[in-house]
Amino acid sequence: MKASAKGMNAIDIIHLHEWRHVFKLDPDKDIGDSALEQICMSGTDAIMVGGSSGITFENTVDLMSRIRRFELPVVQEVSDLDAVVPGFDAYFIPMVLNTTSTEWLVGQHKRAIEQYGYMMPWELIVPEGYIILNPEATAAKVSEANAQLTAKEAAAYAHIADKLMRLPIIYAEYSGTFGDMETVKQIKAAASDAHVLYGGGIATIEQAQAAAAVADTIVVGNIVYDNLQAGLDTVAAVKGSST
Amino acid sequence: MKASAKGMNAIDIIHLHEWRHVFKLDPDKDIGDSALEQICMSGTDAIMVGGSSGITFENTVDLMSRIRRFELPVVQEVSDLDAVVPGFDAYFIPMVLNTTSTEWLVGQHKRAIEQYGYMMPWELIVPEGYIILNPEATAAKVSEANAQLTAKEAAAYAHIADKLMRLPIIYAEYSGTFGDMETVKQIKAAASDAHVLYGGGIATIEQAQAAAAVADTIVVGNIVYDNLQAGLDTVAAVKGSST
Image (cartoon, rainbow over all chains, first blue to last red; front, side, top):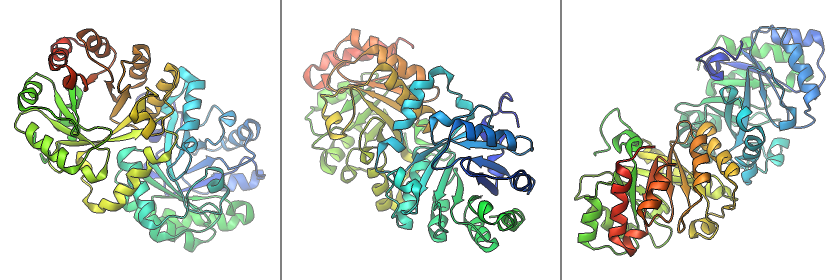
């Protein structure tokens, strides 16, 4: 899992294209050692660390070091430059395709690059084309997204991410609610090369399977804090199946 | 020059990576047959067809068909969806990195994709990451660009284009004035893979050589309408040199 292996980039090192299931853990939420061990030993493909609010260097480094006791890939999804912690296998950088503000598409990225300069670890950076689809979500409000999209509009953004911007990941984000699977299906159909992540509201085996049938990878988050066993059950629900 | 050759995409067909010099011709400006012949036979690597205003289907198809009598690649730089003309070797699609409006980065592109749907000729489409650097230019005003950039800021946008968005072209655009070569040099230094075009105010052999020393390709435009011979002289000035 060491990201320094010569001749490989982060996408290969974390085996992104084999991911079917990942857990997303929020540094701002408490999780006990036993729960964390069950999550990391569940058979999931990787852990993503990130959240929409309350993310600090301290709570991120604490969570990362606890996850590091296990063998699976750990990536940070960067929402705040001050909370970037060295030692992850990769850094996922959201670019919000359906924002109404250039800040969330290229603006913050530009300032980060100016600040880091030649220290920028490009080989560890994986840009994600976010399509935010739940207008009520904090992520939609913070990023000023026009999240009220038809399936056709969402697919058009997916084409931009895949064919114009050639982003390695498209993230269909329903954060907080289970989404419209027809929309996710059309996003996936538009993505010739990009790997499609689905996130939002997965709480049952049936939802996990429905999302896994249309996306390449499902991201399971909040449920592990509310009902750990239900969260763990989503792993077996999808790891046997294939798209 | 036929774009339908199997297994090749537009970038290979037009030999983009060998371009040192191109002329950009504006369908809204008159050019005589003799002048056009001298331009097309000058030894330039390609002709770009496009402009900032007054571009229609009719004046574009007229100019294209006249250029088509010659052997060199001809590409359309698309500024208005209604003026897209079939028959070019490639279609360059500007994405303005330093715009303050998402319209010029992804918004118009999204609507075009919705409109064309499955008819979109992706294999002919070449996205260009535009960095607009002359605040007085029509292009800067139309695209609501924050064109007052330091060299470091311009280089940060070039990193975004090259490493996050993986665009094949970065276009350093000073439209109407000869630019700051140190800024162009830093853009080029930031571009690991992207091909760097420089455009703006080239009117002399010295300017052509100065721009060719820092960019991969120089784009020569307005001068051919004002002083044809001066424009033609820029070809020999750079075609012998190498970056």
